Amino acid sequence: MTDIATINITEKQLDLLLSGLRYVSSAEKLRVEEPTPEYVRSRTEKLKEISILKETLNSSPRKQSAAQI
Image (tube, rainbow, N blue to C red; front, side, top):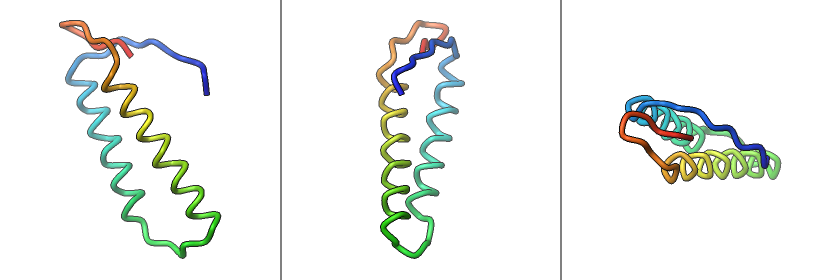
């Protein structure tokens, strides 16, 4: 996944997006399933992708009125 998109969003929208990602991450961590190798692999991949996306959003350069992502 090397394609990078640039969008303009406000700080409020960025905060909402990050809040949603925290919710999704928590939901995935709290999900109760039989710990099969496939489930563990899939869960680990999802959590890693969410973490990378949160890092990307948090480290993006921000303007005063909007955040560029």
